[in-house]
Image (tube, rainbow, N blue to C red; front, side, top):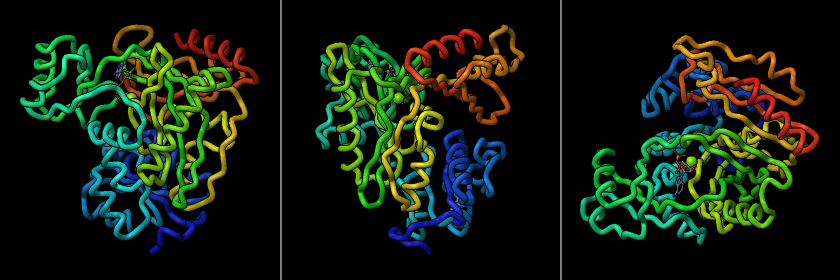
Length: 386
Ligand code: ADP
Ligand code: MG
């Protein structure tokens, strides 16, 4: 059994809980460095399971599945924050697990996450926890209009209701099944940004450049990363906040911290993801170290070196909607050949068989020598895709 202090060198097997696209790109990065991989995910056609050396097809809490993963692997990570923290803790009794179950447990729960931001002195939106009728009745009117979000299991804008009045708030809490929720004040956003940090076992911390993000209908649509995408002071503040959030968790692994930039220029932390993040995908083609290689380095105790972005970049998310551009219910493959005629376009598809509206099918990383050219290329690509 490897100890938390041992460096795990290529040739060993690395495990990941979850078989989605983030797991798939982790597997690709680990294999490129000479590791073997094991994915635990019950879906026989999961994007990561399809490309991994080992695929354990059980649920996250299946004792046999977890035992098999522990037997095969020298270290384990996760690609999915809703993996039960108990499964990570169970694995941690026999091998290094990063991030730790305790950090993942905080990221799973918006109330715990916000309490952590407060503890670290990083400003977040004014909020109240609503888990009981008494807490609902006690809500301060200053939080309205607001967004009621389930404390657990929300993603891509799911599990959220926008409310203007107390009556709407009460109805929304009913609609969400009276589960534990967080009510957040609706803030006037100028834009959104995020930072990926990677923190090693020894506390060393490195970062990718601050990303500017555009969401559509609660789902990330576009990430832009180049000089001038954000005022320098905002980027510095976001980076410092992300580092203190990671240090405060004694975090080991890749962490994404998402922020709102308000119309008055103030920066407010939104949420964290204890894993690589959609907004960090540009690093695959625009940086000398990708967020997935950082994940491999963190979990194995390899050195972390500060990544360098070598090209201005824009990432376009490719949702299943693109397959239905011509109307009707029969999907049609988008014109990848036309998009790939544009210089600096890098296509990443996740191997998902069924295109569905709103489903993340892949992303397009666009790189160029200058921000002007990358923006022009992104516009052309978006036009071709329709
Ligand atoms: P998810 O976990 O689904 O990503 P978020 O809390 O990040 O949920 O919310 C999704 C999006 O909704 C955000 O990226 C932002 O555009 C918008 N949003 C969320 N909370 C607020 C808020 N308090 N004020 C204004 N917009 C918000
Ligand atoms: Mg979000």
